[in-house]
Image (tube, rainbow, N blue to C red):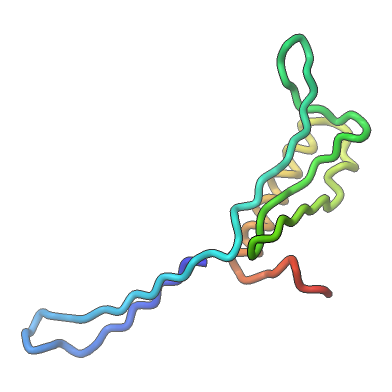
Length: 106
């Protein structure tokens, strides 16, 4: 997580001189991505909702791969799965940004 802490000290010996302390932390996760399985049709790879081809959100948290399915495979069309998957991806990204840990047990 990138954190900026700015502390302003009293002016130094010159009237317009200030000292700032900025602290930057590192994210402990990678940005979540939507895995979309594809099949070869007419020489092109196209998204599929075929049985056995599971959609999920994946990312690394503290170096460990995390896969979250969260009901994505209940939707029957590619467009529905993409829409819900992208919304879920954004929600997970926001939760991680706020400090949620997928490795903690409930």
